[in-house]
Length: 108
Image 1: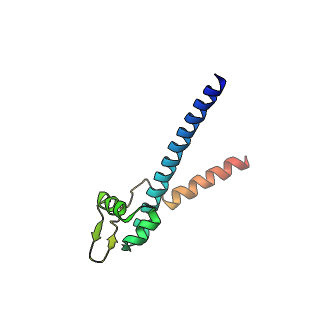
Image 2: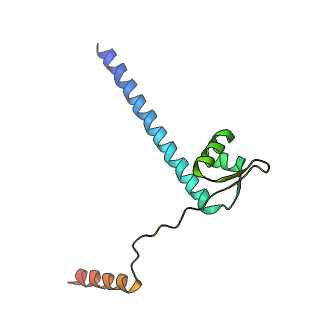
Image 3: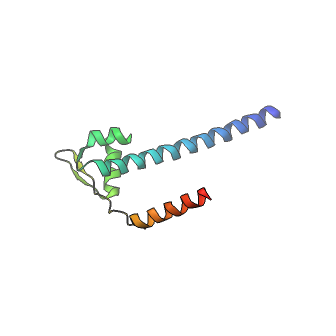
């Protein structure tokens, strides 16, 4: 009875570990693709495949899903640059004011 419960717990933990590994692998792959997008205007299929950790066939599917350009004749990939993110920016004067206020608060 105890041995069966222990066996089931090991199976559950193994499954959880497998899910964690899959999630980490996916996050690393997404980050690699993001970095390739920023760093390269073109990259060979073999280099992309090795950097992302997939086969050439999987790489072709990935890049077409991303909307990138793939030239089969030269085996070159042209990543599509992501549009710049527009976020709330603070002027230097506002930052300096906030810093001054914070230092004043710390001194008192």
